[in-house]
Length: 109
Image 1 (cartoon, one colour):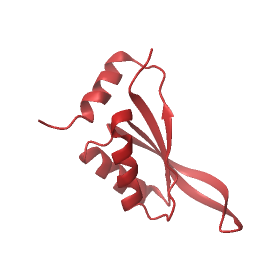
Image 2: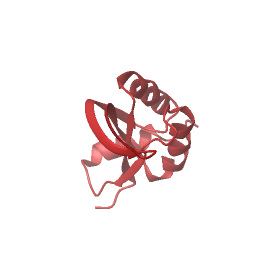
Image 3: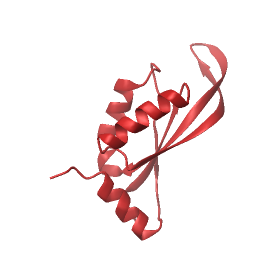
């Protein structure tokens, strides 16, 4: 079943930043829901060094049509110079949930 739903993964410096960004995205109808996973350990290479950091992972539920605006907003308010923003297609889901998701990100008329 094809759907317009996507999940966007974003890591942040911690839960406080994730809550701030998530609240903003839901308030602005760029996301239907943002779930936070605390205590994610990320090992990555940045500016020639291997880094080992504890971060908070955001699982952002939205639609394909809101992704561009969501990416722009995350880039504008995130503390990282280059925030992780990965968009994953959703191939299915519970139809009532998908309907709620799509309705939640529609602009108010």
